Length: 344
Figure 1 (cartoon, rainbow, N blue to C red):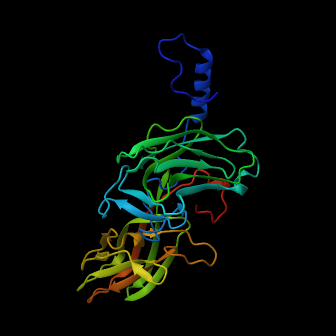
Figure 2: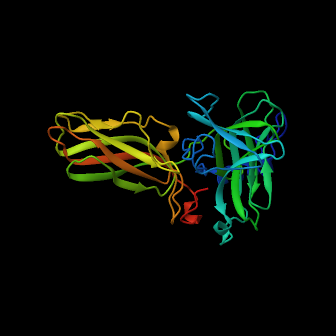
């Protein structure tokens, strides 16, 4: 029997089988973790009109946009941003994250394993948007959003992974010519869907490089490759030996935009004359602070960054500069089952 929060019925004698089934379902859901990376849609390395990192958009003429704080469409529910999906006139649109490829099931561990899902969804038409989980053999759906225009928390209860599964993916489906918003999707092992959004595991790390010696103006002082999608939170500067005098020491950090290295700053990080510390937070085009993974010989948009020294002191140039680029990335609970280059 599966989880049923309506058991036992009110005003009736207790039924032990119902209780046993519910306790069993609770047991399988304990210590759950959100299996989706970036459920708050923070990382958009390809820009605001292409699918964010970790997510895939499909469906003829489907479109996506970053909505939320500071944007033309300010709709949001969990966090600063929401994914807005518009389906074309001939096919449904699907925004989903691929949790596992076929090779992730090579030992058959999925036999008898269930997944449940919950997410905040918004639509302004009935039967326009719903959640979905698919394993390449069977697909489970939530109910449709009512179309009332407010965010509603939809759920999928206990999708049982097929013994012959070829993939595992979860996300939102939008009906032909309709619009749906997805916020805070949460996928858990077990038969009990989340009652609301559950944060995904994240980590905070940095690229740190020392540009030794007396500083000189120049581009490409160093480059860093990204192993996984990330978002740069801030850049810190430290002069280890002698600070600049006469003029500020100014640094720039750029990411690859598909054609050129482009700055993530309007106001660049700098160490003012006679000081030894400086810092700045990215403030230019949002996509430039976002990165994706670089694998083999494929230099895709956002896959690496570079650092320039744009200005040095006019008296003392500054000596032994340390640049620390701090970033956030989402951990993948199913990483052990993924290939080295599986991003979504």
